Amino acid sequence: MARYDLQGSLDLLILKTLSQRSKLHGYGIVLHIQRASDELLHVEEGSLYPALHRMEQNGWIRSEWALTETNRRAKYYQLTAVGRKQLKETEDSFEQLVKGVRAILRYA
Image (cartoon, rainbow, N blue to C red; front, top):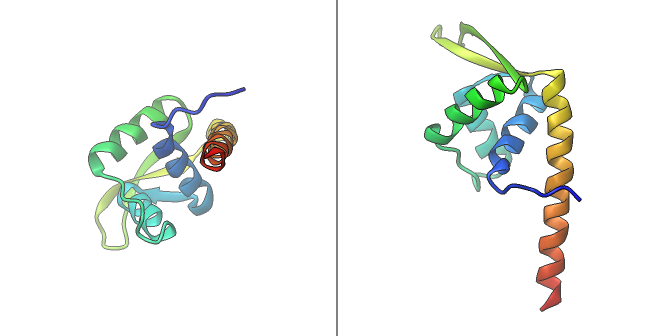
């Protein structure tokens, strides 16, 4: 059985966001996560950008510079085929984690 690293939650959120929105800049990723979670989840820049850099090095995402709606330069991120595979594996592992936590909560 695969083990889920709790720190992998940010990877899961970013990969899932990019699978739903195709191309986003960092701030767009943060906004999507906040809005999709009904403001329950907040991602700090100090966590986001190192994660994006690591995921790009792993080949899960790729980036390109482009202009935003307000005519500012920003790096836009997009999921790769390798990233889609990683997303599937991470989702499966997360589901196992949730299943385990639910079992513990019912045990009491």
